[in-house]
Image 1 (spheres, one colour):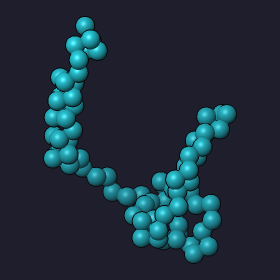
Image 2 (image 1 turned 90 degrees about the horizontal axis):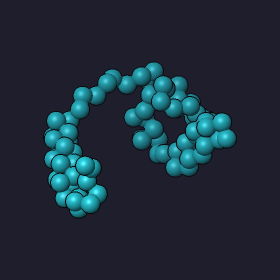
Image 3 (image 1 turned 135 degrees about the horizontal axis):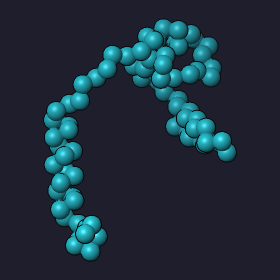
Length: 78
């Protein structure tokens, strides 16, 4: 992964991935620079929206509350 930001604040991310990993993407999320094998044309236009995983959300909420309560008194707001 290579990231760059231009003076005009244009962000560019360069990812080099295996063909199997690339196949899990959609055309609206990537723009190929070099595609000698035509893999971009085989991608779907978009991917279906995913629903949040209830277990992951619950875990993140609990972790946030745990760490927010564990902060020293001097760095808590108010």
